[in-house]
Length: 429
Image (tube, rainbow, N blue to C red; front, side, top):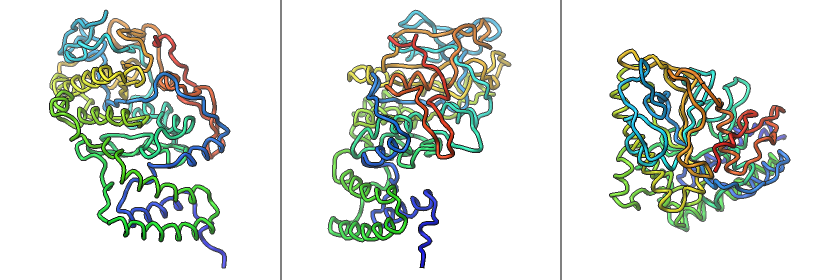
């Protein structure tokens, strides 16, 4: 009788081995840890070669969801657009909002892009665009920069994942690349990596592993799919992680209390500290999400609350990386869905994708530099527009990724990083 295994699609087969691993080990880590063979298969399948790293060996992407007001953060204005804050001087030759006093102290270490522009002003679609560099389409899911990097460069560590997302689930991850390139989600940085410690002793674990190998052998022989067979490597690498010291990267209790307080005792602040620990340990791409930036009402209260958390955490992260000699090899990106309208109604501002601000720090970016400009009101780009695709291509170039090299998706369409966006070379030192 012909086996029905051969009728299963890739997702169904992957779910099968994931559930076996979870039942045997008490783990929910799959498919985040993988051996070099996974990346080699993806590279061979797309005909890519590894170009090597650029100056940025790691990326920390800070996603401010909801839409940060450019005028009340990195591009303060006067007159009718002014809003509740004021412009303050910084350690560099530009001003920021008075809501960002700690960032003003490290402004000489960062690049501010004041000419970001997009056409998407709806939350879900704008988040997708900023995370992937592509507008959302119903026919395909696009990968994040972490997955692009893993496709071209292979895994960044033998046991740790190449990508991690903090304070959100793992959607907007691997896209059309293999599931092994998905980010590992950490929903609460204080809790760290959940379900990573097995309650079973070594002998029980070995028996379970032996049984799984037998089941995998029968399954992979029937399906004849190398991606299923390769999950045997996952079991071994997971056991090495559980027995080794790499799990400590996820444990914020290893950090001094004073430093944890410096980042801010909130999910975003602790997420930024966790990001520093992870890139220090060998994770290539870490996203940390901060929600609550949709300030239609009470913009002043929102900036005093959410803005203050961001101000404290971002300044601490940049300073911490710099003091450890990691800033030159780590690019920190401050990204947001879109900007806010220049019209301030006394309470808040509406969505405005035509112009907004993003920030880069480290990884070869200039220090104390402002790229582009908005007009006097802060409602449109005045010079040097930068699209979301351009931003993705810029970060990719900092990492040494081939921004013009196309990868053919499973549906036969070629895609490039940032959807043919062009790197902004002027921001590099």
